[in-house]
Image 1 (cartoon, rainbow, N blue to C red):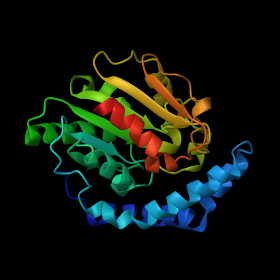
Image 2 (image 1 turned 135 degrees about the vertical axis):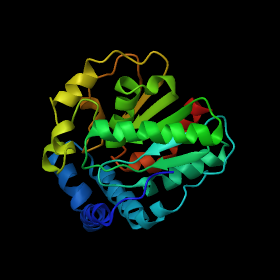
Image 3 (image 1 turned 45 degrees about the vertical axis):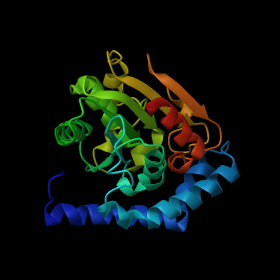
Length: 262
């Protein structure tokens, strides 16, 4: 359903993907950020490294439809990947959703070095296409990391409140994160602590219709859940022992999501 990209854009995405792959496969992520936050348990860091490496190796599967793409569930589910990642990160979660009859599940790809507002606008177009193709009045959205902020922007500031029944975010920097300053692209400025975007979202009234569920973890070295400010009107679920990427592979997280979308 999404537009074809130019060769230049694909080459840029490929470069970002290679850097991300290198960080995860060598262990630079997550070992460096976990070591920097000394209170984070070593066991969580090692588990995070394992699942990050597996999901990184599965990146090429992002060219294929996700499990559950043909499931006939109560509503379509749109999943949004995080910074420098792709929809293959949702392979395991999409499989678990489809096993209980939730879906169909569609992965939305966006340019993570671009502006959040632009990604939110494109998400709106994608959701309109999904609704038209499936006949659904509403969709559910699950966003990981930056993807959760993009989805929240769409719901809060771009008209998505009328079309999204439930928005679930996983490890998303709603209040900003200090590690964003080390990235490149617009996200390095928009998702940092105290940014204009973070401030604007923080002062935006809660959605009138969309139910917002925030899932985070204290052991997340990129976006520590206990350091994120609460969002008025949102349900918050805080784990103690899951890393940033491990949130995507956790059975407990999947169970919490299934309970709220069933």
